[in-house]
Length: 629
Image (cartoon, rainbow, N blue to C red; front, side, top):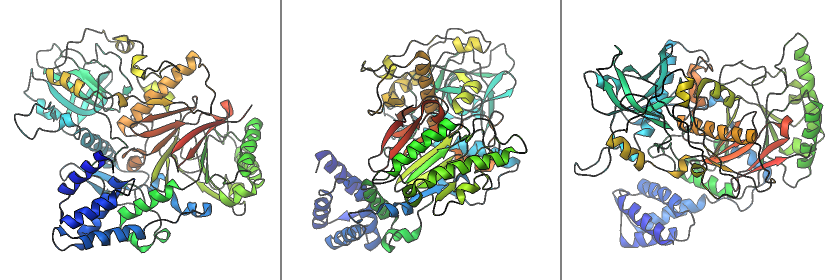
């Protein structure tokens, strides 16, 4: 066993609350030494031992019993590809369980449904409250916002206060967290459950990510009661819940300074192991031991997952009214029909027509005929009909629920020819939709989000992708940001920003983390080509959007006036905890990236560059493929 792992396990044994006699401790360490995933199996053994012992002392026989139960959950050596469908769950937006963080009890409480599509006025208030408390509890877990255990500790502590605590306070630096909004036209405010306060945006400099009306930010500064403006303002550096812009005594300046990172995919956030954020797989797919012990079930699925040869294929912008798209789609389908193991799932994302549909009385039948052509193509591939599932995700121009998010599935009457194919597995999914395959969670969202977010937010300095062959991290290849450029665009006069408080400067240094910037990855199977300046700019902007989406823990972090969201279904748009993979399909060029342990992929527009994405859950790799023109 690795010495580092051994030391960690000994420490965990000492703190688990169970006393092991010498023989039991030796047996436990001997068993864990034979495993590659000893740190994952250890909690399962402790849980089993705690269920069998009468007091806090464990003997060797208790360890043997726990090990026996683990061995009973061992999977078969071979997986039938047809059996993998029972491990696949397609979770629509309306089926996502809703959890609300209770700030007083510090737990996630389940909110029972059903949740109506159209909520009442309190539902809108609850939507923003839920977002606020979700991000705030994540922020308070960062070490710089946790009170030190000893008064004489040298730990940097930056307490976050509410807006109401500023009443009568002046001249002292404070940290606030809240929603950036425009309560009056042209004036930005910071709002939290206790109240709101106006912010001064002059002297704003560039930073990574996008910020605007509807995003949550962390503010550092002080309240100036002597300002000429009759409304007391909280002036200082501001940063969004990734990024977190800093404030100054007289201005609200934005910078690319280090900020509290979001929850990492590795490991899961502490304190949420008892919460099942996704629906469980059907009980008939596991034996009694796995149903009784969820941790053993996860270990079982993870071991089966590594032996899986499944493929998941994602295609965006399947314009069925373009003959060239149908021709290349047929090439792709016939190619996968000839492989040894056909793809488990084909996720076909809209828009399914190059123009909004339907527009006239005869367009409904025209769309049915287009799906009839798709059905004919699939019927030519009998192995795909027998072994694969086709998931249809509506796009921006498709007939569903209009601009309201989450988008409803395509009407069955439109895709009736596809549903009529004998033996074909077809799922009409919402947008967004979640795929749960073994232990992995994949979130799929199709929208022209980059266009919307650039139009609605401040265009700040996006993360740069290091040029090929430089070997430099993105932070060392960025051009220096022009201070005050965004402020000038907003119509305010930029002024020099004074230095932040000592606590803020220490916080900036203590939270520095090179992993905070999304890292673009290049598929080795694709030929490396020099990107044009426009393509490089688009990639950088897409990386900034990825950062904003993950940091705000929301697929569409815009105000409801820009993008309407069903208040009762806003939890389906949240990204917490971070999924294993986010397929953020946009109309811009294809790109794969990794951020905070999660993969983020844009398959690109199929009619434009004929690219699509293949994901292998067994080894968790992404492959960008292209059909020759």
